[in-house]
Amino acid sequence: RSHKIAVIPGDGIGKEVVPEGLRVLEAAGRRFGFKVEATHFDWSCQRFHETGRFMPEDGLQQLSTHDSIFLGAVGWPGVPDHVSLWGLLIPIRRHFDQYVNLRPVRLMKGVESPLRGREPGDIDFYVVRENCEGEYSEIGGRLYVGTENELAMQETVFTRRGVDRILRFAFELAMKRKKHLTSATKSNGIIHTMPYWDERFAEMGKNFPEVKMDQYHIDILTAHFVRYPDRFDVVVGSNLFGDILSDLGPAVTGSIGIAPSGNINPERKHPSMFEPVHGSAPDIAGKGIANPVGQIWSAAMMLEHLGEHAAAEAIERAIETVLSEGGPRTPDLGGQARTSDLGEAIAAALG
Ligand code: NAI
Ligand code: MG
Figure 1 (cartoon, helix red, strand yellow):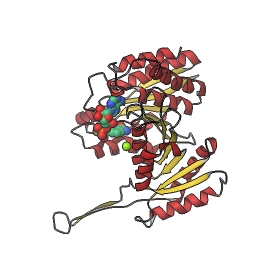
Figure 2 (tube, protein in one colour):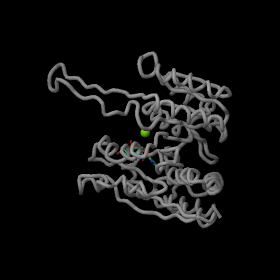
Figure 3 (spheres, helix red, strand yellow):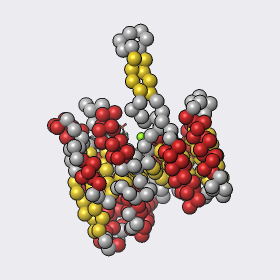
Figure 4 (cartoon, helix red, strand yellow):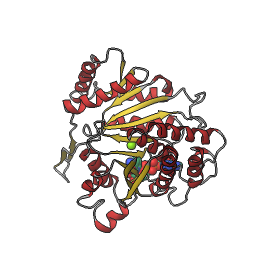
């Protein structure tokens, strides 16, 4: 078996952690009998500076011939973040209909939660974020610019198709787990789109009578994430709410450097994209001290999606073994190891 992977290291520490992800992918391939055929793309802020574009005009077409996309992080001081997001990530997510952004939030063995008294096993849930519509829309603009009446507006778009398919995915995931689904909403303040989401949530729930359903306003839900992260199983939210929750989740499990994510097209009509939750970390870039675990765990999610279940599980186990049995630790985990030390140790732990 062979998997064709489009690799986009991007900027900053993306270029440092992606090679560790590839190292572990290759080690897993040797151990479990598959090949990784990687094609590298230098799409990044640097390329944007040089050419005015993040990717060539036929960039999406080039990606489409791959089984999966493996991304580091994109963004760098000097290029406004919305330019890099809309120049690369959002076109990829939307073109390939990667409407699920899936983020596991799990307290790993060997990682200390900033919350006191939490043990591995206590925190183990998924955030399912809608990834193609919602609050991240291009509809809106400014009026009366430069006057006292100046205003900016932006519309949220919830389509029945878009809302139903993310809810269905979340219910199905809950069915494979503890059968508990929490919906993030804000229907008291946002009176058109959010009540619509709630309605579709209730409607979809009728197809999944075994699933225990909860819904909270986003404000109190963020507090619950911090105080009671052990109460969740699957949490579903719109593009914006899901984004916020899926950064908060990893924050309660230790280091942002550990958390993985998948931008998934569940129908597998198009390639899905896997990337760590963290960004390019300009403050530590170039020092060789970034934690590669988020990237490596993203590689495991990618393999799971490609049907390499045994390899995916083995990588997760290898990460836990290294973190819990005295292996090298990068500074964010309280150690002095380098990025490559941790990558090598995880590859070696695969056996
Ligand atoms: P960030 O995640 O890059 O950094 C936040 C903090 O966490 C920094 O102190 C950083 O040193 C630390 N950190 C992040 N990853 C780490 C790792 N693997 N090991 C150790 N420490 C780590 O977020 P920030 O600073 O808000 O964004 C920096 C740039 O990255 C921006 O241009 C932003 O747009 C971009 N970004 C890109 C993302 C993507 O490509 N999907 C996601 C998030 C941000
Ligand atoms: Mg985010």
